Amino acid sequence: MSSNANKAAWISAPKATPLEVGPAPMPTPQGTEVTIQIHSVALNPADPVVQRLAILLEPKDYPFILGCDMAGTVVAVGPSSTFKPGERVIALAASWGRKDPKYGAFQLYALADTPFLTKIPDNVSFNEGCVLGLGLTTAAYALFNPDTLALDLPKPGGNAPNGKIVLVWGGASSVGACGIQAAKAAGYTIASTASARNFELLREMGVEYMFDYSSATVIDDIVAALKGKGEMAGIFSAIGKPETLVQCAAVIQRLEGRQHVATVRPPGFPAVENWPEGVEISNNASSHMKSEVSGAVWGAWLEGALRDGSMKCRPKYEVVGKGLEAVQDAMDLMSKGVSAKKLVVEFI
Image 1 (tube, rainbow, N blue to C red):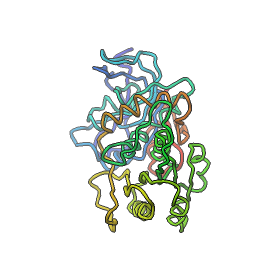
Image 2: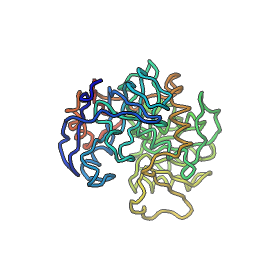
Image 3: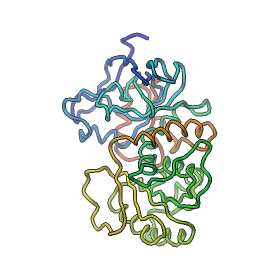
Image 4: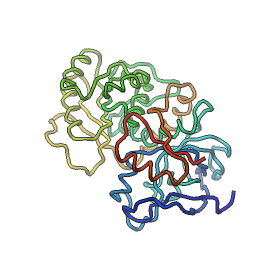
C-alpha cells in the first residue's frame, strides 16, 4: 500500500465549494483503530449543511475531510484492535468529533474506531451497509441514552415484547428507519408517521401502527388508535422542526405513559415556543452516544442483527455517482431534499 495511494475530496476553507479532490495522507491506525479502504459512502443532510454554514468546525480545522457514513475493507489494524485485515465493515466517521481529517469518510482510506465500527455479513453489500452510520447513532442516542428516552437496550437475538409503545415521527427518514428497527429489537411496539406513499417501508420494518403525518387529523388519529393499547414509552421525533415537536407533545399529553419527546434537534437551538408544561423534551447531543449505549448497539447487537435480517439497511440506497469527484454533486442533490432513500457514492 503506497504512502501516495490516498486521495480525498477536501473542503479547503469555511463554506468553500466545490470540494477539491487531491492527495491525502495515508492514515496509520493506533490502539483499537483500523484503516479502511472505502468502497461506498452515504450522504447525510448534515454534510451539505456543514459545508454551507461552516458549523461544527473552527477556521483552524481547515482544510478538512467531511463525510460520516462509510463501508469498505479493513487494510490495517492498530495493535489493540480485534478486527483483521480483509474484513468487510461499516463505520461512522469521527472526523467532526476528533477535529481530524484522517477520520473523514470522503477519502479513499480513512481511520475508524470502536465502538462505531462493525463487521457486515456477506448478505449485506457495501452500498447497503453504508447507509446506517449516522442514522443509527443518532437514533440510538435518542432512544437509549439515560438522559433521553432511556429505553431498554436491544440484545443479540432481540428482546421479548414488553407491551410498551414507542411512536417514531418521521419513520421513512434514515434516522427514523434506524430508530424503528432498534426500538423494535428492544421489545417495543412501534407506531410511526410517514407520507402514505412510504407505508410499505414502515410495514417492512415491522411497524404496527402507521399514520400519514400530512393528515389534518393526524393527532386525533394517533390518539384514537393508541389509546388503551399499551403504555407509551415516549415519542422519538426524527424531524426536528418546532411545529412537528408541538404535534408530538399534543399526542403524548393525551396518552398514558411517559410524557417525553426525544428529538434530533441539536442543543443550542432556540427553545420550542408554546411547549406544554409537564412534557419533557430532550435534544440530540452533538457528541456521540455514551459508551455503554454505543457498545451495546454497535458492538453487541448490530452485526448479528444484520446477519439474521432483523436489522435491514433502510432506507434503500441509490447510487448517484462514482469516485471522489462525484461527492460534490451528491452533496448538492442532498441539499435539495431526499425522501425515503439514501444517496450513495461508490469509490471502488
